[in-house]
Length: 107
Image (cartoon, rainbow, N blue to C red):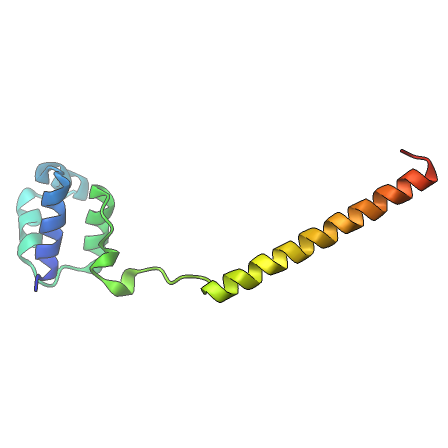
């Protein structure tokens, strides 16, 4: 199994992002970047910073970085039904309002 530094190195190399440019954007030396590749305990913050620079999402490697889904599928169905309910109610009220306007002679 790869350690954190090796995962970062693999992602950087596969991205084709130049190491010297990565070092420049991190405001570090190239040696520092190579030290990251060798470090099994690279900080999550540094990994995320590198991911942002090379446009790579490390959350697939670190499950605790994944954003939880806000709604479950059954909740999504309930929300959709609720939206349709209120939409239909609004349309019915608009129709009644238009009828009242027609009856009063304002339309």
